[in-house]
Amino acid sequence: MTKPHVIILGAGAAAAAAARVLGARNDIRVTLVARTGETPYTRMFIKGIAFGPASPETIRLALPDVDIITDTAETIDPAAQVVQLASGARIGYDALVIATGSRARTLQEQVPGSDTTAAAGRVSTLYSLEDALQIRELLSGLGRRARVAIYGGGIIAAETASMLHTEGHMVMLISRSTVPGASAFGAPVAERLAAEHSSRVLTRFGRTVQHLETTDTGVVITLDNDSPVIADMLLLGLGTTPSVPAPWADGVRVDSRLRADASHVYGAGGAALHNDDALGTWRIDHWDDAAAQGEHAAQAALHDLGLGDDPGPYLPRSPYMAMIYGQMISGIGLTSHAETHLHDGDEFVVRHEANGTVVGVSGIDAIESIYQWGSCLHEERV
Image 1 (spheres, rainbow, N blue to C red):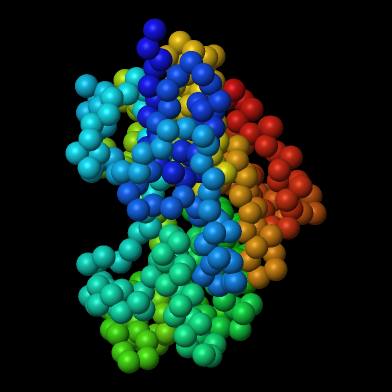
Image 2: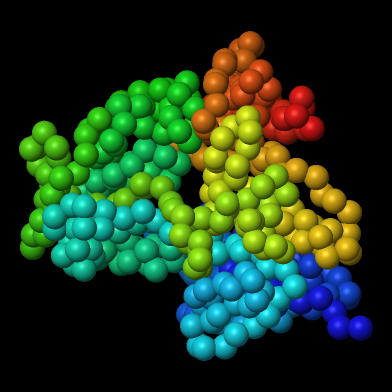
């Protein structure tokens, strides 16, 4: 009897986790397709490459022992259950896990001058290993403390501002929101972080970048109030968007079992857009949650192939941490797009609720208390 063939697209946290679950079995055939030219690495550690002494080898991600193809999935034919690769090869599947992750948002053509400043190496995201190496080269080549502007307000932007400030660089944080990070941390935590930013680095909150110009020594950033900011480099921390093959455009929309609308197709990690009756459409793009989604998608695929138990609905319970200005910002579960309530007690803990059910918890310097909520999240929905 022919073994069912499961294909996994991607080589990040979600893909590796799915491959670990599926690769441990001997009753299926597993193929992982990693993008052409991509070296798998742990993305959460790239700041150590950009601003520290770490080498790329130290963050390499070891993939499980499954068949690996280095090629890029361009299109999926769900009716024929075939993946079309950039090389021209076509491979069929019985189940497909799309874990192709995300890509960093850029300024693109929305801001005049963004293309030329990016080409000059003066504008960069902090998302990929290539980004980190470029940033390291520029900062180390200055021979002095740098003037770094950061555009954004989420976890990456806040951590980067803190790290550069600690290293003695002059930092300006520019944010479109007057309370940066509210969608990532929840408003109560974000408000405290905004005060910390304002007391330690230069800030321009409630402002947008309108124009960029490269100079011999850096970049001139013009804001929407026509005020200029002069920096050696502009780092973008504007979040991410799903990176998925056709026919999906804005992410793979999945149900509670991480099933896509096509038969035997599953989405996980930064590529997946979740639809929930209580929370609406949501997406989490951090390492631990991506890994948890990868495992769940693999288990759902096994169940639908008649080879495993139903894993039940996916309910986010994964933690995250970020050290910002010496304070540990941590969270667990879904900490955005939900009502928030301060938790009673001495510690600064915020409960994120939807229809009276706690779906996430975030806070400052309260890791133990926050992580204790892990088993209690979504309690009324299970």
